Image (cartoon, rainbow, N blue to C red):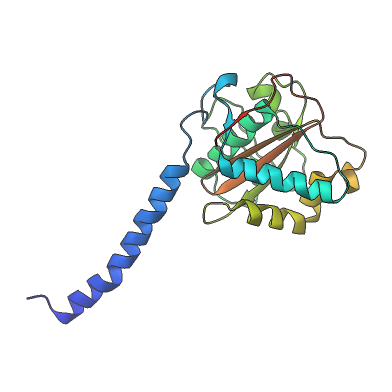
Amino acid sequence: MHKPGVLLFLILLIPGLLQAQEDRTKKKLLLPDKYLFKPYEPGRITLSKAEYQLYRLIMDYRSSLGKDTIPLSKTLTFVAQTHSGDLTDHYSPNRKCDMHSWSKKGSWSPCCYTRDHANAGCSWSKPRELTPYTGDGFEVVYFDYQIPVPENVLKKWKLNPTNNEMLLNTGQWAGEKWKAIGVGIYGNYASVWLGKLPDKEGTPGIIK
């Protein structure tokens, strides 16, 4: 016969184990099987439903303020998806390198993006490094302890002046015109990359 204390312990433990299993299952369902940590392959680049939803939310936000629609980019989507995966699997928050950083675990040069932006070029160059895109790329990135929800992602970016100005081409970005955008959501991160040049590779597919 089990002691009352043991039964109580099991009763308290089981819900936590079930929740942990549910969280692992959700993350497994989110994991892509087509692009992370693999060379760029144009025919394999697609947006998930959540990624496309985030794209539409950003475009609707821009449209509500009289801003043009930015064409989806196959190459910048690859960069965004890859970086979201790299951050989820390899990044640990620290005082030196922020979320625009890249690890040493992939087929790219590592990048420690510091708060003073002194090493920003190692991030901006990633589209050229990973894809045929010939211009710089500029990123807004989001972290959540849960799977990112598109509405929450945009809400947080709108509240951050730096991110909001980049998404709307205002402030320091007022003189720029975005010609390409890529979206990636993987694990705990959402990433959007913006470029000043059109993407000659075209647009990614969309998972219906």
